[in-house]
Image 1 (cartoon, rainbow, N blue to C red):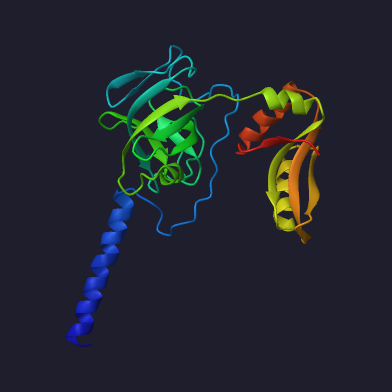
Image 2 (spheres, rainbow, N blue to C red):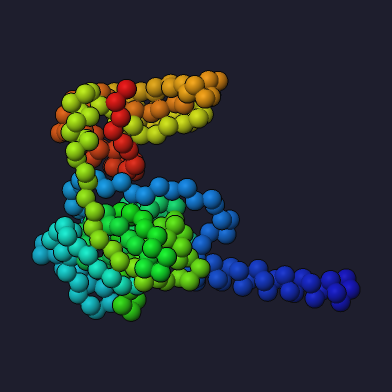
Length: 262
């Protein structure tokens, strides 16, 4: 083996080791950058999480400092620094015992009740997003909110790492919900171009006792040979039944749904 080959092996080994240590100790975006098409979180009326909301008086402690969880998120508004957290925490538990997913529109906040929904506006570029708060933090300096990678990407703060933002809580709008339920509504879980993907989702729902789940094939006159397969649950007759189904769906990790009428 000549000297050049030996030097090449040494350099490559250093690069690999550096990469491994960076990945182990650091945080950041995924190695393979995906085209993020995640939509804003949809505000829902949800019960408080069993975990992550402090003791019976709402207190919890981190690094010797006590924090008090707000009794309600209604009307909350604040300005401060937003940061984001990525691959180091991907797949780990959040404070309310959900799984952190860097591609979901979620966030961490020190005192908002879990879960809450907030609109985040980047004061530099005026871009806005809506995220679901399901974690605690950030516990660094005076930062206000920690965004998921997907949320930070949509707000255009990944490169800089932080940004000045304004956040405010948003709540579920029930006007259309009440009107549509009166007309026999369905909860739509998703719409798929591939038939097998829709039926895989249907199987998951059936396995979890969603007996009224079904797949509806819908044709579009612009693409008559390419139907859309819509996974739905229903019909549902009232808001109480709707909320019960949403609660059960959240337990199996389904959050993004909408009301439709067929």
